[in-house]
Amino acid sequence: MNTDKIPNPKSAFRLFLFFSYLLYVNCATVRPYKVTNYFLSPKLPERKLKRVAVLPFENLTKEEKAAKIVQEEFSLQVGKLEIFDLLERARIEELWQEQDLDTLYRFDATTAAKIGKTLGAEGVIFGSVTNFSPYPEVKKDTTQREKEVGPSVIIVDDNNSAWKWFLMGILAITVVGFIIYLVVKPSPPSAEVGVSVRLVDVETGDILWQAKDSFRGTRKSIQALVETKEDKERLVKDIEFLASLLCQKLAETLKVDR
Image (cartoon, rainbow, N blue to C red; front, side, top):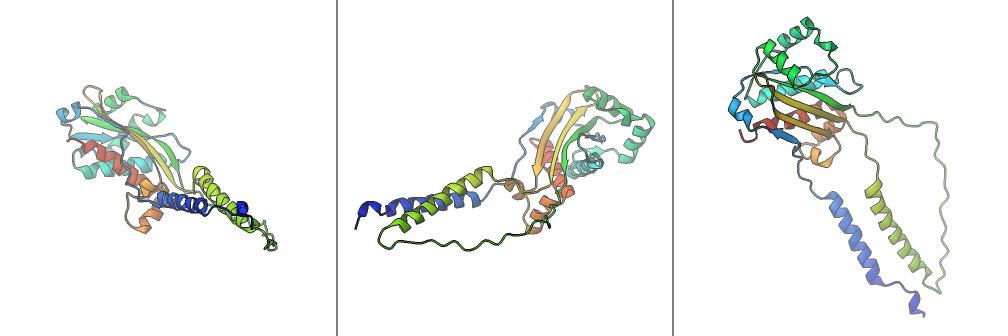
C-alpha cells in the first residue's frame, strides 16, 4: 500500500470547519439598520419651530407617483413625532396651483424659505425622491426546455486511492465555489427607495436638519427592522411599505437630542 496517495484527514477536517464557519457567518443574526447619514443643527432646539410645512417632493425617478407617495408618507411620519404643527396639505397644494410652482425644476433653501413665508410657516421641509424602484416581476421563460442529462458513471479502481483524491477534490471545489458565490452572487429582486430631505428655517434660510438614505427590501439589516415574516415579505414586494419605513427612520432623526 502506497501511503503517499492517501489524503490527509486533517486537511479534510479543516476544510469542513471552514465551510461550516462560512455558513454560520452568512446566517448570523444581523442588527437592525440605523440611519446615520444626517445633520442636525444645534440651532434647531433654540429656534423652537412649531408651524412647519412639508412641501411637495422633487421626483428624480421615472415613476410618476413616487414624489406624491413619499411626500404624503413623510408628512405622516413627521406628524407622528408630535414636535411640529404641520400645515394642511390642501393649503400647500392651493398655493402650488396659484403660483404655478410645478414649473420649478428644482428649488433651493432660499426659495423654500420664501414659499414658507407665503404660507405663514416658521419652517419648511422639502426633499427629493432619488430612487423608487418597485419589485420587478420576474417572467419565466417558457420556451426553454429542460435538457435530459444521463447519470454520470465514475469507475473507481479499488487497487488505488484515486477515489479518495476525487472526494477531496469535490470538497475543495464545493468550498471554493461557495466562497465565490457569497462574493459575487446577484442580488435577489427587491423594491428599493431613496430619499433626501431638509428642514429650512424660514426666517434665516438656514438648514436646520438634513437626512439622506436608501432602503432595499432584501437587505438583512432592513429586514431586521420588522418582526413578522409577513412584514419582511412586504418590504421586498410592497414599495409603499418600504417607503413608509424609510420615512419613519429618517423622521426619527429629528428627535435626536431634543
